[in-house]
Amino acid sequence: MKWVTYRASDSSERVGLVRDSSIYGLDDDTALIDLLGDDGSELASAAERAEHDPIEVIDLATADLAPPVRPPQVRDFLCFLDHLRNAQAAAGIDMDSLWEQIPAFYFSNTSSVIGPNDPVEISPGCVWFDYELEIAAIIGRGGRDIHPDEAESHIAGFTIFCDWSARDLQMREMKLSLGPSKGKDGANTFGPMLVTADELKSFRAGNSYHLEMAAYVNGDQISYGWMDQMDWSFGEIIAYASRGTALRPGEAICSGTVPTGCLFEHFAVQGADDFPGWLVPGDEVRLEVQELGKCSQTILPAAEVHRLRTGF
Image (cartoon, rainbow, N blue to C red; front, side, top):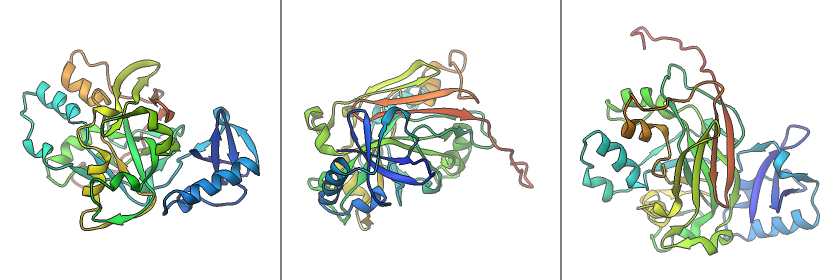
């Protein structure tokens, strides 16, 4: 199944089932997250209702899409270790072996979740604004202390994820050893749809899926990779995320950046002299993942910075 949340003509958000190039709207005000929490039976039942008795059928290409799910929690991991290796090797830094022992993650801002075609404001005070090409697994069935071999059965489906990053702010903040804050606070894109795992069976490769991933800025391809380049599997990172705590339906477990999947990696590898530049107002960023669709977003100017007494 493929699901979207779209903005109806009365500005309300409605859940819809995607069939071919059309959206079949559910006939009630149920949110997609309300259909999660079991083995997928609720989603299947809702799909039958939507397909056989939709409240409306609209064109997917022209629909005003909201994020398919608004996660109650977002954990962003670093599963593609070559992304980190590329950046650190360019800077002459040896990668700490701890990255291969622990699937590291940070918590992100659930209040800044936006849809796949919504505009994105540059973070206030940022000059080095960046995208990240990622995949998110959305938790369907919650759990605690989940075994890695069973963890994938807790996934409702997958969607494209982009944590928009203020790199210059992030680099300054990370010196304080508390993780990213305003450098990762501005916007988190999810969309365009939630694709259930059964739709991807034919693409299974090892512990992941052989899905093509690409990113474009103003029509020029900047990033290209494959989902099955992951070092840490979704089963492993879900198990780790649930260690000693409960995961809830709708939570997002994100993959981190595919190799070449952000401007910062290119900046590190190419150097300042050959780097084409950071995102600026008016840029169009398009992220595409095979079977999961595409997100296309316009970059807007930053809001004014209200300086602190220190000048920051």
